[in-house]
Image (cartoon, rainbow, N blue to C red; front, side, top):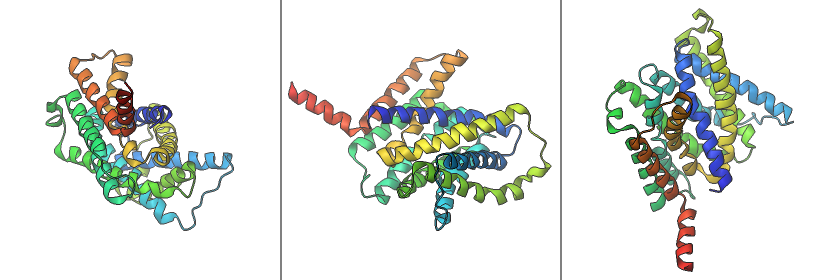
Length: 298
């Protein structure tokens, strides 16, 4: 994990962290499945145009099943579960529960890959990260403030992300932009019949301008741009390190609230972020090798 990769990881956390806010705006006016379909469809259109602008074509022939599977695991299923959950629980609690993704990611990567086996450093880092999130929000946050099934839905989305992150490694035969575009396209195709059957979008009222603005933002910035970064990072650092983005989202939300909303930063929150920082350091085994060599040179 170079300094550049840590910077990209932080940027990705910022992009995905703000998507919880956009969902709250959108689901107040549009049903969850159609919210997600709009997000994915707009992102897919933008990414196909981006491909054309870069002179690239999509290798769709023979790849439809691959794109639909990775689209289901990384987009359709988790996005719908999260959007539905935010009808019943806060966006903050949703982001906190989403921080369980590394637990599933590490387990799936350990059994499903040859080069991302669970190590002591990764295990300690993930445990510290989860502990830091719990300390940051307090243990009472996970016991109340939301419906049980909504919280379980977010855990289910984390499980899907775990499988999707590992499966995404199989797209090394194409560029990050092609892989992300294929994923968005496959996910969109999957959701169209569900939106038609469940939400009947032709019966819905036309959303106001602020909802359209949120839809464009979550589609173009939080989805299209974010998933191009995601596939680039998957190729550079692997699925396990990529899962750390979910641990960065809650403290980022806290900092944004303090800067832009004047919210208080408590000692409890600072302690939680410190533990998360230790967890991130523990997962970076290179950090410990450098520390060890520094001590030996003294």
